[in-house]
Length: 411
Image 1 (cartoon, rainbow, N blue to C red):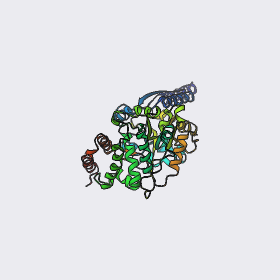
Image 2 (tube, rainbow, N blue to C red):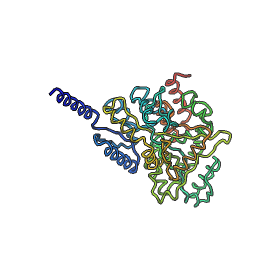
Image 3 (cartoon, helix red, strand yellow):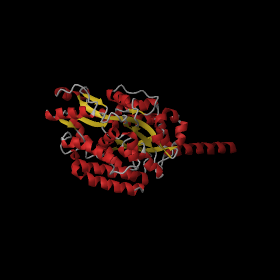
Image 4 (spheres, rainbow, N blue to C red):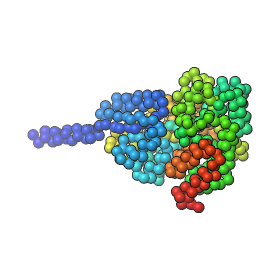
């Protein structure tokens, strides 16, 4: 009787343990395009099949809305997993204690080896807070057919050649450059690349770290180059009326010839358009400045307030496999974060891999991923004001300098 009672109690304890670790897993997912949503739906179904004691409840949120809502989730009723960005954007929340320390998972799952190149952007204060999913290069998508139509024989490698190509397109009645300035971060890509090409990686990162005044002549030089494109009307008319989602169709439909963007948009290009689309490195402005690039990485995180961290860790370990990470990168038109995953044969991903792997001047994350969030937000608002009215540049930079001094307590 006593032995039977002990067995009964033991079985009950095991059952209770199983119930405690099982349950619902909530996952908030930022996505762009039906292909990205379909990928996550497939992976979630595969995870549930391999883990029948867990039910995943995903919430799919359009990316721009997601950015606005994320702080509220992390500080109140947090989901169990969120999709986010590495670098300063990750560190901003890790510093405030809003993300779970995943350092033990990096050791347990072999991530220190498989994600070695992304340890630093996944970290804050010596601890890892993310599972990297993918990274991507930035460059200029362009319509080969429109280039050929106006006699542009090769991809512009220099700023002079880029301006010449833009002039030929404009003269033929073709909008040279599409940009979705309503999403302010699309403008930040132009600032990043002009600054990297004119002033170099070291200066750029000092600016990102709040160490350079915004009234510095070198910053003004970046905006002067940008103003050349605006004054010559090389951008689509009224760029602030377009989001990325409404600007990309201009490229797809052949109404604009070029777009500066990350390779992640390639998944949204129809097959017939892909055949007519090329991708090239942002042109050299100053040949004496070593070429540097943006190489942005995305990730998955477990919020500190998550209710089901046990199953969240199981899901991250599942997604972190080389096989799934390779599929994710192929679907997203990006590069796999796991160094054991196969790089897609997608031409844009291959071009991006070549650009980043051959870069010797330094690799940044991206404007709002390398900078204090408040400073980045003010900086991008300033870019929108500049694009709307370039004559206001001095006032814009003075305001940004006041903001820098307040945030970084510097003079």
